[in-house]
Image (cartoon, rainbow, N blue to C red):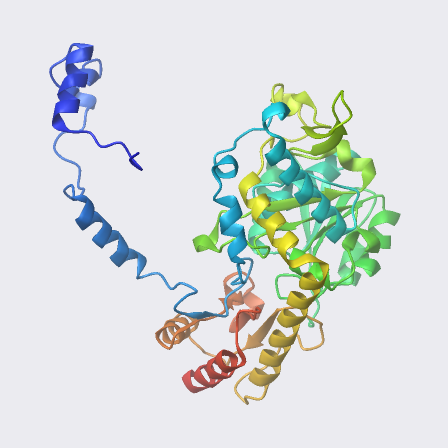
Length: 451
């Protein structure tokens, strides 16, 4: 069967004859002539299949992919190893063609896969219930703010400036539609959320305190220290966490978090030029009926056999949308399956091992770069997982530096000055298990030589 349906001139003629017209233009006869576009659109001529494939391959080669370049770019999308078993599983037609498992009698395989994903997320985060995934981590964060506002009947969301800038932008967009106020909290010279500023802004009107750990600068936040201030004010504590870190770090749920969200891209999902990814969303038991999206539950059929069904969802999410607690009623099932297969393949020991590799290689890279008199670690006082920041010499042209690194075979770090004027000239670097010692040393030598 063709991957697409080709149409010959004979096919076109037969279709026109069937509907009783002589030319395609007759389909638009009801549109006044003056309203129609005259002339030809400025697009290239049609190509045959061989020429088209040659053109597309040429364009694709212009992308700086992870196969040809050593990537030190993170900031939310990372170059992690993708076990080959993932592609083997998710390429099965019963998974990649599956849509909505409303009919459990014919969807048990997909429902079980989603249930396993939820179970893994609960174990990693230390929470009672997880949903069947969200569109991405940023959407999950915004939905967490909406849940907190609805649960507490309050209108203020307190969010750290160390939370990913794109996630904060989506939070503000969502908040505007719900008539919520977003209040930002600063960060300390060490790159962590300023608890003194947090304390001054959390009061009886706060619905949620929102933190990210590791935060956008790569620094670990003191979640246990922030939790009492949120809870004493009657607010919920929302934590966004990189799930790969949870093989080593204490689960946020055990540190006082009420809602834990994040992006599953580090769990076996390709970077894919920035997406799509898959968000996770987990809550403490009191809030499970307010969760957005789908939840798969385990049950038994009338003969006592184990089975799986969608559960705990208000029909308003699907029908009476104006009364819904969330307008998200879908999920990223295929990408959630990627994460579930990844976690299954690694297991508990594998998650710890991969976490230690990330920590060890990132800290080696930080120490190696700190040896250069031209570079400085601005947040040296904070702990980090696999991302850290380096301050470049004053006046460094970040765009020019990035192009030079690319020419040398490296995808450089993220320019923090794009989102934080006070961090102009600071680069955020990510070092994953994919980077070798030789690549790290060569990157450090190349970077120093370009400055």
